[in-house]
Length: 290
Image 1 (cartoon, rainbow, N blue to C red):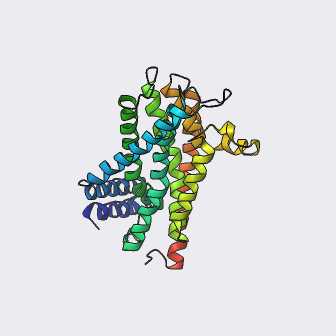
Image 2 (spheres, rainbow, N blue to C red; image 1 turned 120 degrees about the horizontal axis):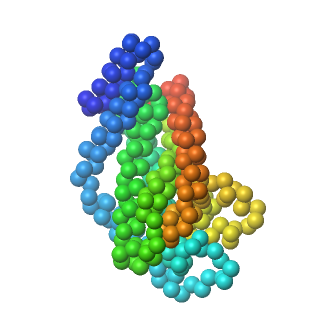
């Protein structure tokens, strides 16, 4: 464990002695920053994987570009102000990358920490569970936002995504809030992976379900009526609608307000669930798995 990770618990212990609290918020914040610095240092030289990931994503978008040229949508289909089916699905795929980072990648991250024994070492430190949760998801979260921005730039510059009326501050705000609303899914899945195991297949199933119900590849109006109430409750569906409206000059403030309120509720709740999962795993002796 590096010196940054050791200093955060030490600060927490000092605060506990002076304030009478088990761990201070400052110690938790230092733990988050220490984990972020560690992950950035470990991945500073991983450029080939990013380029290959980018190439794969562009080829995937190219397939949908050709599909959109032969696809004839029904006249009544609502593409949420998007100029074409390609504009609609391209934005959905970009947001899907954020969902994948907030679920599948963070579960893979905590599973690796658990297998290497690092999670048990971290959990033994006098720091709150929420700081470990935020620290572990921080790098995938930041990287997903960066990757989404790169994809949007390439889509506009190369693939002809219509962004002439885009409200870019709104795009950034909605995208950031959307990612914050996706993170709670990841933290709950991390808790499931730590306490129960088998988090990866559950995370992948969740990504498929969210993409299906949030309007990634087709409008949710095409789904059976019985699923419409479920779609309406999903923050990922609100996020996609808001992102598409912001990119086409439509109203996005309402979606941003809903996402901000949702994140304010779900983030603390999911962090608490992860903390309880750590407690369960500690009791069961499964903080380290083979």
